[in-house]
Image (cartoon, rainbow, N blue to C red; front, side, top):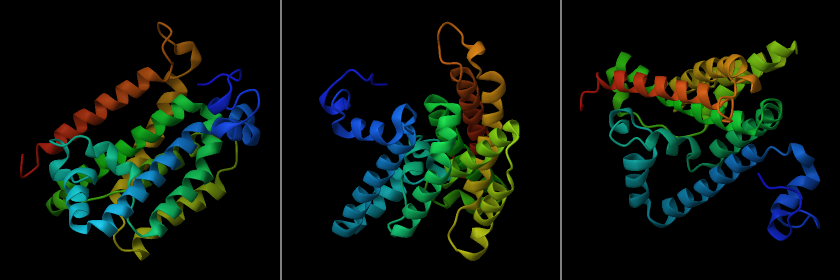
Length: 253
């Protein structure tokens, strides 16, 4: 966090610089994590497009060999669990739809639960989407070789989380349920969508939000550490163990 007494890039005082622009538009409630995720996804997509246009073969090797999530290789190349949730297909519609969806939910949820919890929720939900693909591979062996990229698993986790929060606050959730139902039905009409990723992200994101509500309260702070850190570490450990368990059925293990 940057305090409001700085100058220059920090945007304090004279309000100049990127952070100054953010403060002028959002004040102290700027969705900085949502902004950061958006910028990372856009920069990653620009790099992808440059490689795709200038060196398509190299791009395919990097995408399938290192960046995309491929269940059969994920345990041996664990960075795939993270890199894929910031990447998108080279067609502009994929990243455009996902970023619009992020901004429908992200700023509201980040303001409700705080920056740290929101970042943890996004990442844990993305890992949940990856786990959904691994579970599917165990049930349908042809799934081991599938590859997936995109923020959709993390976004479905945000959907589930905002349902949990709104329900807790007594806010009407009918419009959110309709929006999510439309998104869940998209794989029926649009080929190539990894619905397993959506389901995994939704389930894990919802459960993690419940854990944050009951375990991540400020009163739960231990030794001055953020109150959301313990449930985050617990969920991370459980997801790792489940992924290792799924990998026992990996034909290339």
